[in-house]
Image (cartoon, rainbow, N blue to C red; front, side):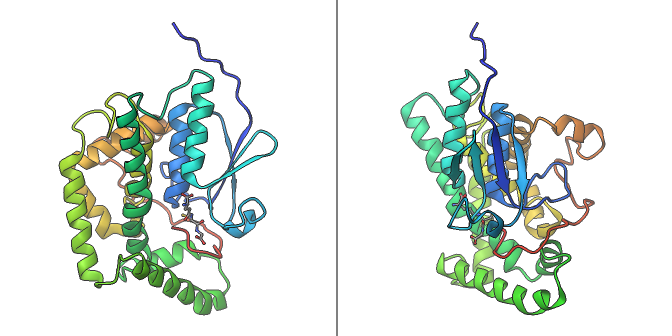
Length: 285
Ligand SMILES: N[C@@H](CCC(=O)N[C@@H](CS)C(=O)NCC(=O)O)C(=O)O
């Protein structure tokens, strides 16, 4: 039997502000992804919360997450971070986030990329561009901001995020086309979702699962009720996300027992309190 070496360097995750929802460690899909990679590998870590600007000395791109390993190793970008977590975990005999087979490994990274670049657009659009969601998103993200920030700065940030979505080819054909596309993509994912186990390799979560989960689980909050409902209509996808949740969130059983989760309800977080975010200087997701 292979014994796990429990020693590891100190790990600090620098990330966006708290959600106030126990089962959702971050509204940022990229920070959530890193939480779940750490959860799946069982590495110990602590978290420092703030806005991207608060950590600009660590990441001049002013994006979160950033991971600090040991005293002075600073890693930016969730993909690079997850690759480093993989090394840290396997170096001590812990779980791997990658399939052994090289082709399956490449496929896991391709799905990871698809989640970060493609699925992310739908999450950003549902929070920032959908007028049905915007009032709650705004009040959650910018709660506690001075009135002039809410009145002047926030609408500017929103316009900038929407312009970026158009540039990414998400909103160029308008909202109706975007949501038609979203449903089509969910249908494809529903058809592709594994009926048991995980996305690329069957018996344990890989980088593909963690990245897909980061983006899709973020839709299952009160902030994006319409998109969360679309997701809830795809049972294979919902069951799959719940399996990933279970495998990557050590505290899940405790939250479930406290009545926060049930098997049938999955992550229905509609009763959760709003996020007490301070003002992000940039878009959160
Ligand atoms: N490619 C980056 C994306 C990270 C990202 O976009 N983070 C958002 C929070 S969800 C952020 O920091 N946004 C601030 C900005 O882009 O100005 C990664 O994978 O870490």
